[in-house]
Image (cartoon, rainbow, N blue to C red; front, side, top):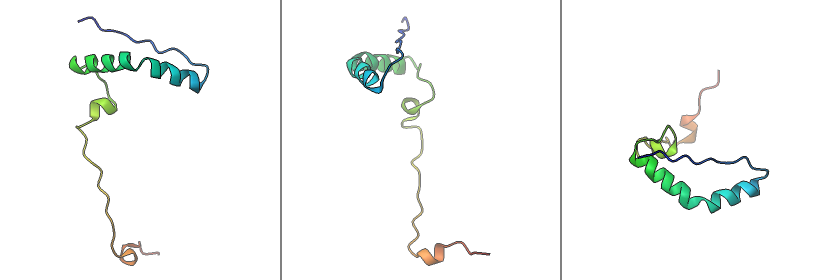
Amino acid sequence: MEQQRVTVPKFGSEAEEAKWWFEHQPLMLEEFKSANAESRLGIGTAKLRGQTKAPTITICLDPIACLDPIA
């Protein structure tokens, strides 16, 4: 299958960029689906989703006991 290239233009303002992305959502969705099916996705959120471990957070129930000793 021929690889489709989407050219994202340079924008003069954030509003102009937001409008372009909004108007091209269907095209970008199809490009991402195609890239995923063809294993063309590179490093990034879409590639890593489902392959990364959830972060863990330790919650100390006794804040005094968890303080680092001051030298």
